[in-house]
Length: 510
Ligand code: AMP
Ligand code: MG
Image (cartoon, rainbow, N blue to C red):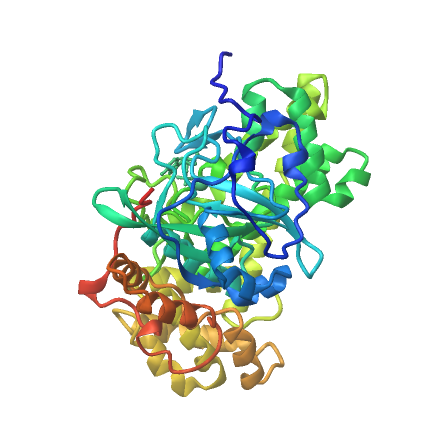
């Protein structure tokens, strides 16, 4: 195969000309020490007038990074790509990917720069990446930039997901560039600083598989094992153990998405990590009324990435990873295929159990009995028919579990409240089989059923304001969605969109 090969590895700028700043960050850049064909080595492209929107101070603390230094002029310059922090070794990573089912052998960081890695206070290694940081050899026809809207969308939703306990990349900072980017309209530019357990994607493996570069595949797999599955290194068959590990993490992850009504929207293989973290908050959205067929992304014409399709798509993506690893499993094709199938077969039981256990917890059950799945499915069907708000129904059930008088607030969420009235006695009968007092149960339920999620209309409102240079709504929304489970009067942040406010489509905005 004759594949495009950008000038990987080679510096494209005079590195002595790059401005360095000391921020006291202790980098240890293992990915940049991999072979040169894994990336292009270049710094971010400076911008006109960096201005800080926000540093995520608790995250900086977790990473062992001095938040004051990040907020200083030198820090803001580094977060905008106008200076390189001392110790960083900036690169754009190579990767490929299936996008909506079609394979592109070369995608790569077309608008992102990996500054390097730090070991956080909890001992885990984290990537620090600038997104929207200017063109790279992978940019193709893109400008390498990001608009303020998508940057703040990722900030809000990634931090909300983290607060809800979902494995996810995180957002350390957002800065405005003082430049304009041209999309459908002219928008203010911004750069996001993304933190990830790594940026290794299914598509990273596909990049080397497409080039039949088995050497690179084994180097990448060994690297990923060291970083994400260190115990697999001691397994009898480390590469299969690694695949099984990725399968388990992704199965658990997609179950969490479903529990929260999350629709990723662009589950391409380049947006599927081997770490098991959610990545890429492009056209994502949360369900309002429960609907397994819900699609929000304006470019998902076929509904490929609909809410209820997500487990199937994750499996499809994992099968693409397995194909890449075949040469590492065995020299004999048949044997390799059998081994891949065995690892992939772990998905269904892990997903099914994680999904069911999460739903049981959402309705207040601590144990599993025959009939529980049917009880939950019946509720979901009634919610779908009655267009009941997904988040509020479960949140109000917490109160109803402690006190039947609270049924009133649940039943009015259904277009036909009788649908809830029929279900509730069966639910109560089942709850009665568990010797848990109502207050304890309510407490447990409130830790899995969020009061506040980043509702689509509130996100859109915040992004629209930011595009007009008003970051107030972003700040207020972020403050609310990062306390998802805490009981309080959250006002409009806990209420579904009115019909006129409803957001039915989301846009990548790349
Ligand atoms: P995404 O849709 O963010 O998952 O990106 C898919 C691919 O398109 C990746 O290779 C990105 O780097 C690239 N890409 C997206 N937006 C841009 C842009 N504005 N400039 C250059 N590359 C981009
Ligand atoms: Mg992406």
